[in-house]
Image (cartoon, rainbow, N blue to C red):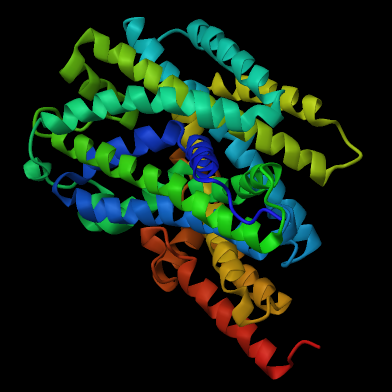
Length: 448
């Protein structure tokens, strides 16, 4: 029985995982963070690496080590109803509601719109997103070829384009990283700012989703023993996430260096466009457009594939894979036409809700052997974390939505009595309290 992948197979699976992870947000958010953090970019980058690299790796590892057949099986340790709720919300978030539409709007905003001499018309966005999702659907209807398409074709093309841009910027920097002071949240706490910026990449959520994709690919390559699958899954995760971390650091540093010449841009896409034009002129916009399009295309393929397979498993008597794939592409096409700013504005509060639940689930799965995966511990931690995560969601709602809801008194009380709430980490202490209660219940009455 085959125990390990060959070196070439491991590289291909690691490349595939990196390709699935690294998409729209993985370019624009580190660039924006670097510009805003300025001289504090290293502290901010450390925070970003925790949530943008460490947690995705742990998410993939949790699926492999737990030997669960996907996210639904892992969350079933909390309860069947919670499993259905959390799995659906997570996949819809990293799928057709936010992440997949963002995959189309980011290359449009950073590549197509500037070529049109401005922000671009709604009609141009509609045409671009239609072509984009037609290509995505074509790849996604052949899920058995995902290793070839993403790991061996789209990913190398993306890395070549990105490498050209980053090499030019690092060899001839626009200025030292200390050229500008930190702004906004990074002036208050650069590490926490970077930590929360990592939420926007959605990679920890994607780690839980893509873990089973990696497991299935490893099985298809001949490794079938559960322990060997876990070892190879973790190894592939280290390769994919390690490369992602290197690129995060490079993009963040280039963003910080650009403050030596340019003011901070309004978003990461604009920052990348400014950097590309600085080094390559008008051709820089072409390089950036190709780079971002490949990055987003391969991620969208992975997300459509993963979401469609998951919903087939969740609803075995419902539509088939092809129907889900077509439906998700159509919905994503419609959502993309609301524009990038609208997508980001509404994604942020949902991520503030989901990330605490995902983080606690990952840590419990990894440490489950210490408490025999006792369901009471899972339930207690989740029950304490969920209300605090909901408060973080309400606090992150767009100003217009907050104005329509009677939230002032509730959020003011949360800021006064819930530690770390003002930093966006109000869930930490409740989660720890839930862990203590769960372990106490287990100690008082051990499971039979």
